[in-house]
Image: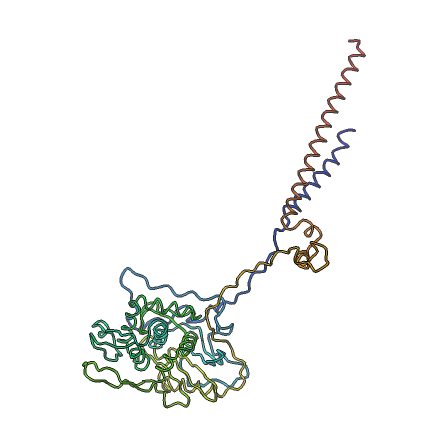
Length: 445
């Protein structure tokens, strides 16, 4: 057969090889999973990354050093999508929130269920001032027995006050110090407890780690007392989460609700009365306790809780002013608002811990024992699940076996082509030799 007749067949074979190779090498090796949908906080939130710039020198860093970088912003807002909003967040049909509230960020939530009833810029990052002492007290409650004795030092006494009035060399129990910390917001007491926790650097690391464990991912402690310092950060949402968790510790709940205690006098002789400075305690129906704070950069802050008719609410306010009404009265107005809400569907939730990544799960491989009684071996329901939704080729060869089979087929076809080419070459040589012999015979050679 002339070679011009065989070329179409050769081209056909080469085309077939190309198709087989493309199908084999391009076959999928697994089922593609869709990319997860993530909701980021709006980029236009004023305090999405950091608190506002300081108004004094409290956050200056030494020459040659840089302030800590802002904490990362979670891609998915902790507590629900609406917790990423910067403005007023409330249910569509809810009664409007009190208009006398000046706080830049606040959260009102049910303390038992964690349902957020209303909020404003809940994840906006602010400075905590003394509400940070709630987090310190929680670390103390976790790590130190109440009857542990702590000896104060001159360094404790010399802290920037508000101070309870510790004495260098004075001995105090952890219970006394925790009560003074929460009732009178003593910075000298905060330093003493931080030192007992392993030193200030160790204490603030433990505080920040505990905040992260609770899901308060906007919070970073730099000082144990909440005094302004470079890198300090929290949010109204986080403060509510932390206070709600702290109230689960009986020693904390007792200390923050105690009206007054006798405390060792600084002179070393007798005692003084430490009075709880939370103005809502005893003046607001159902008040369970709270902690207020103030610095020039943080402005006025407050967190507290109250109970009425079996309903417990927590409220947190950050960066507020004392006008037109004091910050504790603004907190009271929000609590009143929360108790008046009936059947609110909520706008978010206070989490009980940091969001956890989903664990990968692997479906167990089918075994012969998984077949139903009397069914043929290999015909189990697990096997049927493995082949469900697949093409006959995928079912027969599998996701990995199909490409291997295709490559093997390609090798067979290429081998056949080489065999045919060799046969054609031999036939052509034999034909030329016969023709040469015939010509010689005609010439009589």
